[in-house]
Length: 313
Image 1: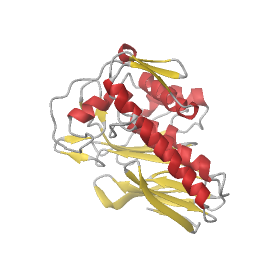
Image 2: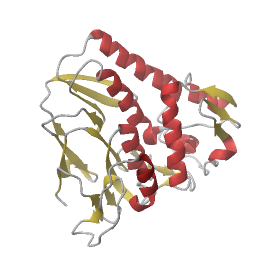
Image 3: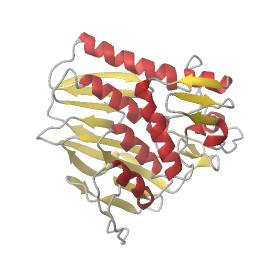
Image 4: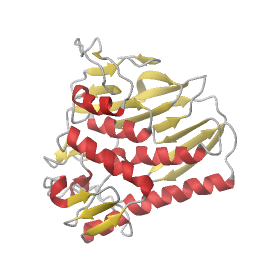
């Protein structure tokens, strides 16, 4: 839930989620068509739920696949996250999810799963082409929605001075004087919030183990064990762009914020101090941590000192 002083909304469904674009003036038909075309392009290349997508073709046929220039940052970011998490955040998790029942038919009937292969064993990336040595089913959901939000925001920015692009709670906010107030949904009760944050620009992305649940499974899977991760319930990350925030929000399910400081320092993101809540009773020290809120499976809450953040737990 959020409050936004802008008044013009455009809502639609795409990439398996609900989108809402809020602007200071109505978007033209041309702008809306450009947004739709870009989302369709992303879906046709990256979706593992479409039999006619490029990703589906990679699962059938080894070979060289050229990426659009604007998509290369996504694969580069995935490689950085893969290395930083020891292979826990990997685009090679697609077959595990498919076998677990999170497939094109949404059968939600788990079958036997096996760990994903190592990146360098099956794919290479030379900056322009993805070389698939062995057919493999990719899934870029850990950072792909944030990437799509950034792509849409770049189009909207050409047609509106102030805007908010929200895709299922992952959002980009244009700079403004009056902050947008956003509720952070409680992972165990969607009718409640664990806190509020006021953002005057940038991106916010969340990840939660309760979003897609079936049987003993949820969609955040460790490719090294072929099983869902259980250490974290939910994360929120604040960054300058949504692809960054989305990827880090998923990485925090596998890796402590302190272990991601190298990424933060290398990319020049704003440093922050990470502290435990009164519930946790402990404190992290150091700089160059991702701005985040994390709820662990034990109920411990970790967070950085983010301006405008108010927690209720």
